[in-house]
Every structure is written in C-alpha cells, then in structure tokens.
Image (cartoon, rainbow, N blue to C red; front, top):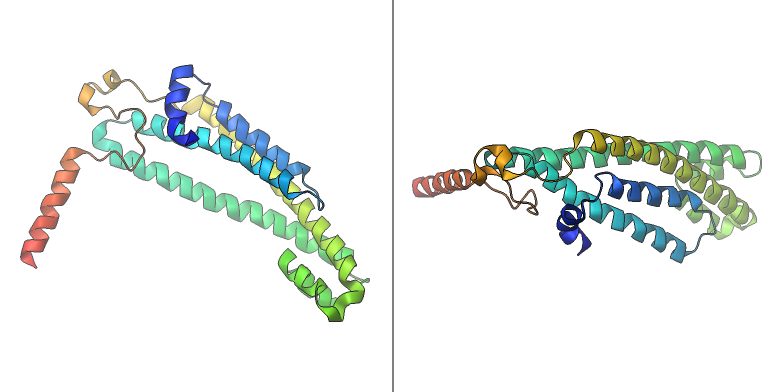
Amino acid sequence: MISARASFTHAKLRTPRAAAVAGILFSVLLFATFDPHSSAFHVIIDTVIMGLGMANVMAPCTDSIMGSLPRAKAGVGSAMNDTTRQVGGAVGVALLGSLLTSHYTSAVTKGLTGHVPADLVGQANQSIGSAVGVAHDPANAAFAQQILDVTKQSFVEGFHIAVVVGAVIILFGACAVLKWLPARAMPNAAHGDGADGVPMGLGPVDVVPAELAADLAEELSVGADRD
C-alpha cells in the first residue's frame, strides 16, 4: 500500500533522492542492537521500519529509471532494473552470509574447544540450527547450556558484523543515488516526442511498447497457423 503511493508522494513533496535510503540505513543499524535475549517485539519493530524504508525506495527508483528512457526502450530499462536488483540481492546475501558464517564457525570453535567433546564442537559450529539440535539431545544434557550460550552469542556477533558491513554498502549506495539517479521521472519533453515518455507511476512490467506488443502478437499468430 505504501509502495504504491510512494512515487507520487515523493514527486509531490519533492522528497530528497536519498532520504528513503537513509531510512533503510537507520533500520539496518537498529539490527545491531539485537542480543541473544532480544524479544520478538524488538525484531518486529526493526523489521517494520526496514519495510517502510524499502517501500519508499523500490517504486520511486523504478520510476526514475523507467522515466528517464523513451518508451521504445522501456523493455531494456525494465530488464536492467530487474537484473541489477536480483544480482545485487544475490551478491548481498552471499557476502553478508559468508561474513556471518565465518565469524560464527571460528567463534564457536574457539569458545567450545576444551570445554565440550570435539564431536559436539564439530556439529555445533556448522550452524545455529545444528547447535540447538545438539543442545536439545538428552545425551548432551551436561553440555547443553554451554553450547547454547556460546553459539547464540557467536551468531549474534556475526550478525552484527554483517549488519555493519551492510550499512556501509547502503551508505555508498545512497551516495551513488544522490550523484547519478534522477530525482524523478524526466519530463516528456526531454524525449523530444511527448508520446515517448514513460508516465510516472508505472512499474517496469507495466510498460510495453505498443509496436513490440504488436510484433509479438503477430509472431505468435503466425506460429500457431503453422502448427
């Protein structure tokens, strides 16, 4: 609901280009306040703040990208918009996840070695889920609390590292937005022909050049006749 109105609201109020990105940065930094005893309410509040920031970033960014292109190249703009979003998400998950996992594995190994049997250390340092499973095994009751304390603390510390790195990346992204991303869709006059401009508020999948749609329909019709 918020995302659907974000583009029009930003254009009407002339919201700064990086203001919403700054909101996401703030919400990411709030994740650094988590600890092993954080409540579900704490997690929900931080997640909601991030969701509000994302809602005010995705639609306006899409509009500025699509609005800066003539209608004939809307398909190219849509493809690039989706590709950069998906690649960025995949790389981000891989990078931040690797940082978290690396710290977790080393911290758990260091914290449990010499205090817990080696085979249990090897299972606990694989993942937080594996550690919880080991701790809940009745055969390991004597080491359960120590395993849980060390693994939970190690996971949260690794999470904090990932959050800080993510915040730095978002900060660079905000700077890039300020420098290169148009504040809003460009006026139709910028395209020479008013009919070529992509109207403000249309998402990447909503804009299909009429000529391209007609060509595709004709090809599909010819293919069906041949079959």
